[in-house]
Image (cartoon, rainbow, N blue to C red):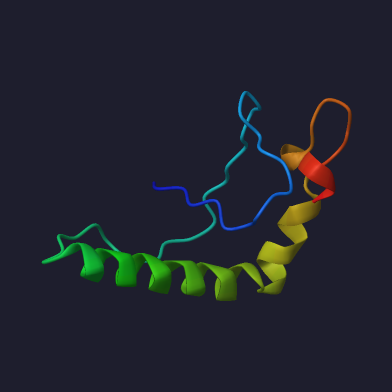
Length: 78
């Protein structure tokens, strides 16, 4: 599993606990002929992830208790 933080946060979150849930599979690991090819693939993966995260079964996960802190707040109000 490789995690990409897609959201742009207003503050850094160094030292915080990051909760991650795997909700899908995008593509197998593979080699690339160049750095540009890798960067293009990563951008494509991010766009695919955004499309899938907008699906109803994934949108409802945003409110799951798994993603809340002990103070019952979502990080940075998100």
